[in-house]
Image 1 (tube, rainbow, N blue to C red):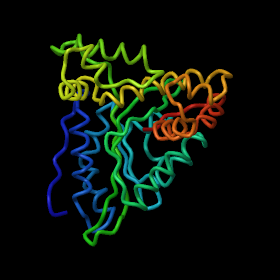
Image 2 (image 1 turned 180 degrees about the vertical axis):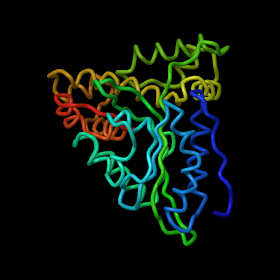
Image 3 (image 1 turned 45 degrees about the vertical axis):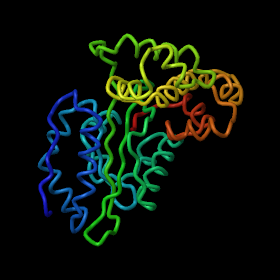
Image 4 (image 1 turned 90 degrees about the vertical axis):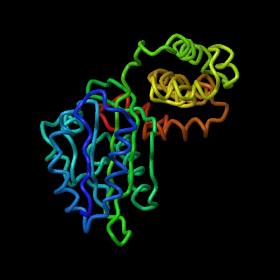
Amino acid sequence: MNCVMSSPAVSDEISPAELSRFCEGLARQRPENIYVLLNALALIAPLLNAIPGVVFFVKDRHARYLLANLTLARRCGLSSMAPLLGKTSADVFPRRLGQGYTEQDLRVLNEGATLRDRLELHFYSGRRTGWCLTQKLALCNASGQVIGMAGISHDLQEASACHPAWQQLAAIDEYIRTHYERPIAMEELTALSGLSVAQIERYCKRIFHLTPRQMIHKVRLEKATELLAGNMPITDIALQCGYTDHSAFSRQFKAMTGSTPRDFRLTLGGEMSVQC
């Protein structure tokens, strides 16, 4: 490679912005082939394995794993990454979830699309759910041909109450959780908090690592996943969670879970694994 890639510090507090820069740094390398990049990454693999709240992977042109850190492997119930190699997400995860993840990978590979700060619901063993911010980028060689892709997902941790604007932001979070079933205007949040729109945007990203719009989607989808465990019709769930259009609900739900609401409900009856 023409340049040396700097590695992030080993810390549970590594920020999504740092992860995004790391992933984008990979995309700028333009190696001769994907294996040159893999050889370079092997030197810093212990760093990536040492961060439990981060999932990292590299996939080939067909969306098959070439490299994954131990965090991802362990969330799949594995003790090493070896069993993942050569497989797609559709091979590893429950069908209704894995297929959606692979479709997303193929869009990145075939269209050169970039996913940045994508808020997604992911699954742990024992059917526990959590949220992550995901970055996925296509990797190209010196000729500009796509040779693979890299992805990093960062678990969203509980927000810290130490920030000076915590009280206002906690009020915003509570307001969203109380009124998520209807449209929420930024004017409501500014009147509630006494902060400007720019301050709300900046502080929400700093403390929650989310935009206000992402916070609303997160709360709505959390409620939707709870309701999908029951027998309520999906159309009614969409309305109850603030979506006046069923198709819009389905698109948003699939974008954030990798699965349609119907398939997610079916998956709840089987084993759940994790992917970001």
